[in-house]
Image (cartoon, rainbow, N blue to C red):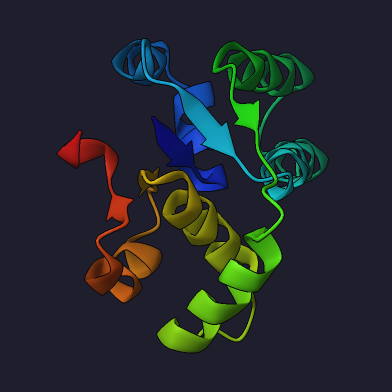
Length: 130
């Protein structure tokens, strides 16, 4: 089982090879994941970085990941603690880390800054490390 963040989810949504790599792995995410992914796709369409067809394919690719939405009762409190511990101003990234902590698994991210900043938690892994 892995928590997947929005960057990793977008990368996998755009790549059949990445989705194959994740096949057979239970993927979970906090409710925030869906807002972040859909917002990023819509923004790319709005900026004309992708076509309508490409945006629709990204949305379908995200659905194909079959990420399970998880919101444990302690998610907010754990995210707050991790944001304090890691010196994060915002709790967005910390929510993904908190879910990994509470679920006893790791967070899959393509965000190098997050990977480096949270490395000491032992919770973070990049696609290259799978």
